[in-house]
Amino acid sequence: MTSPEGLREAVERNARALMEGNFSQLMADITPEALAQMMQMAPAGGGMSLAQMPFISGYTIEDHGPDDAGGHVYQVCFESTMGRATLAATWKELMGQWKITAVRVVSIEAAQG
Image (cartoon, rainbow, N blue to C red; front, side, top):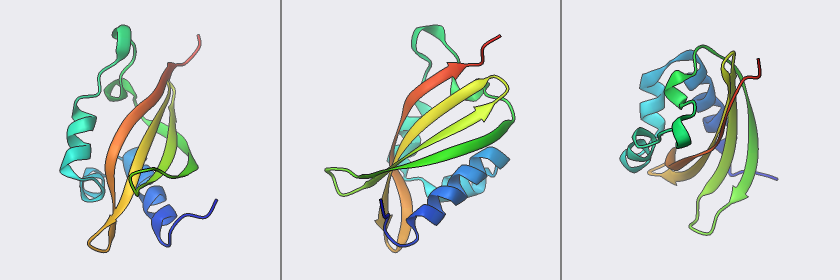
């Protein structure tokens, strides 16, 4: 699947920023609405939350293509010693820059053992 020009690079930059704790880059990539969605994310049933994930050791990115609202969806799975968290982010080009306009948790899995 081919993503729009420059989008894959933006997704990679954002995932790397999250892994490295580069919050200024994270804030530059996200709209206020998507940031509000992230702030409201809480673990279901008392499970592990994103905030509990320590040092992120890696990530994988999957292109899920365009959505019905004109955005482009990517899923990013972050891995750490505590487990893995998969997020789906909708990206749109706003004023010449790729921004995350919506985000949701796909899954959070604690490490076994």
